[in-house]
Length: 260
Image 1 (cartoon, rainbow, N blue to C red):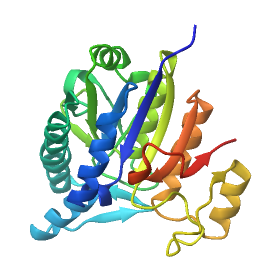
Image 2 (tube, rainbow, N blue to C red):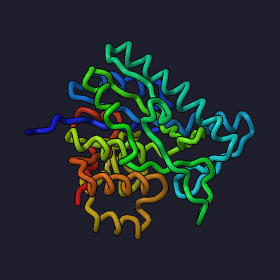
Image 3 (tube, rainbow, N blue to C red):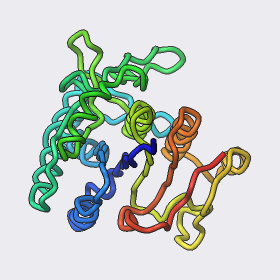
Image 4 (spheres, one colour):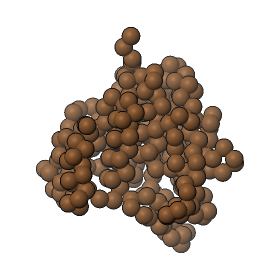
């Protein structure tokens, strides 16, 4: 029996920070007829708020280091303001959505990352096997679109900040037993570019060999590395399709397909 298609769509912080771009994206998301889950972070807004409160933001290889004060900020921004604004806008588009942190319904447990070799603080690593897939499946069967932020929890009472790309990949893997999962990373660029300043330098397809070449030549750096690493973890674990594309191209085929 053929599995139904499920779109796991991760939206990037630069799009969230642009009211018009986010509005347009959410209109397109609402029009998707197939089951769908939206995953978001919101790093830009969190960074801005941290600056206003004089709390330093630390990054390491595209990932945020989260101390106790930073955790408060990302929780307020991701699980609060951004999550509920997105849900409200989807409701306005007649898309019945529910906003979730990882702690809600134990949907995304995580393990605090080992401080060796780098101490990321209150950062949680997510294992697909621990995700409450049956709860999400029940929501989807009721026609409800889950909107998951990147705030997870350690099942011991502490919230954790997880990489939103990692959360999206883990959800796609966890739900691949019941759906043909398509993982879509949407952000403010056309896809993976060989020159980040040239929109015409889109790489339409990346293989594992090509990925290593691009990294070695420093053509892929920073946050794109964990994004593609997560793409390959998803593919290895049974996710059917992974695409990196511009948020405005949600419903068309323009973008970078990640393949073996």
